[in-house]
Length: 265
Image (tube, rainbow, N blue to C red; front, side, top):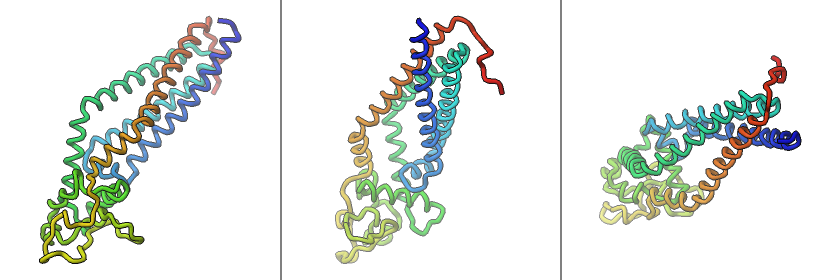
């Protein structure tokens, strides 16, 4: 490889590693957001399932590793250090294989994940109590989900017929976050009373609520954004492959190791 091509490869690899630094920061930030978030469906799952918290720590670890790898790649490319370039290539290959493996696990275990989410949501709905401060964060998060997705219950409003408080009130109240009213200053948490229940009793069919369940709403959101999700995943994989190609190409064409190029501390 000529010196001109070597320089081009070197600086292209440097730019790729800058992208990896940014990507690592994004992954790290996403993991921290999952742990810190208290107002969305993420919070509901996190408080009911330890697996999401474990996943958040994994994301933080992957993000930190990606940033470190980007730094090593930049250092190896600019200073033409073969051992760093080889280490960078190996780390990149391991991450790519791990990502593919994680994607396959999620794909083949999706029914199990769906069942776990269903159990979490149904348990939260059954035990929903606006006066229970211990469950306040998860309940507020679920109210936020129902309001934002415009849904009610996991499979539908009928799920709320299992709630003990609503059973004791003969279904004459309904979850405010399920309301399909567009009135300003609408309450989005706790229970709201029906204006005129027939004979002091009612069913979920009498409630002025959204008919769509949150499971269908979440699936619809995923389908609507599937192109974006696949595009991002494909883009990341292509960048990783190009980084691997550039690093091994540069590594093979650096003929002698010159450790005087390593920055002195």
